Length: 209
Length: 209
DNA sequence: AAAGATATCTTGACACCGCTCAGATAGCTG
DNA sequence: CAGCTATCTGAGCGGTGTCAAGATATCTTT
Image (cartoon, rainbow over all chains, first blue to last red; front, side, top):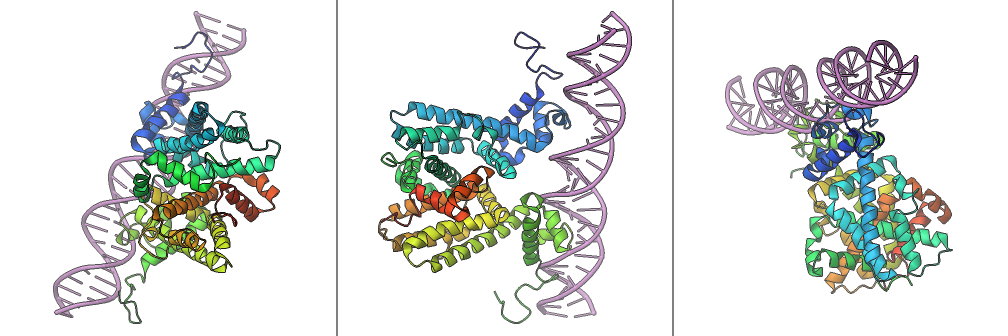
């Protein structure tokens, strides 16, 4: 059964099992959380035998990498959308931070897989370094548009790194119960995020000029 | 608690198996990493049967919690030392951030266990909320000593939260290979940390006055 | 179209895992 | 001493990641 028109793409025995496996994994991840994401469960969900995935992925880790890869793509898209919706570079910076944390909060299991696989390799995903339109570049470019000197590479890198660390740290912390009363005091989750970012000195609308 | 001189305390059948198990776990953690930390392996390392730990911990998670608890104690101690060694509150703030990240970098497996178990419960450990001399309090108090208004609870909490998120974010990021060339450009790991903190606007020696 | 090569999937197995339970053992209490 | 309770062992359950061998479907070559 060849979809599209030509017999290209990847219509193999099953159709496209790698695709189906990643989809099944994401379905499981959303429904049952990261701890339920076993290779056998994914195969079960996709309707194949426990050994089938090994013809498409070297091991479980490689399947998780594929899932994480999709996660980074989704994050890129979310940041692109936030950047596009901002009327000015300064608000863009602020919105990028909020969008980043919101993505993590709305996809906690996926976010965890993304960073767990990255930490296991001590290596951020390829998208982060190779592509010219990845999430890191979006933050960096927004900073330049906001007035940072594009020639001072070192400075730009440090600032972008600081922004990324801030967002990641907040993304992981925002899930803890301890912060619920502060969120309430701020008037909701997003105001809380903006307030914390403001106290970090970054993502602040009147920040880095 | 009668842990004075007599044969009280906890010298049971084995002597003190819970203690021995936590020690074995930390030994394994340091030697083999978090993925090798199975309950059976810990029991093996401690020289007991695979079922023995269940008389001291409800399940594997509870053993990991005990390990994490020790981690938070060590972190408290590291921060206390950094704070004590600083000549001024402002430098204390900066040193706290560096000490936090250094602790995470020197005990990566332990740090991971600490936050993994916390995230699983969406709950930072008891030490973080109950004690009056925990790591969170140290950051908060240092901020007050640095000139923050101790009466503005909301402000203090936000600032302390921002500081903690920054440090955690940087602690997790600093392990990635991608940052090695920036570290080199900064002249080492600690200068890199200080530079990133400076760009977050916190932990900066001339920061929050 | 027939035959062979190749990719895909299944079956079965191995070692390890978390966890439970019945029984053996050691220490405490009366 | 006996009785009791806490501690530990052993065997076993269902689950996991992974591999090797065989079955099956697709592609290639003739």
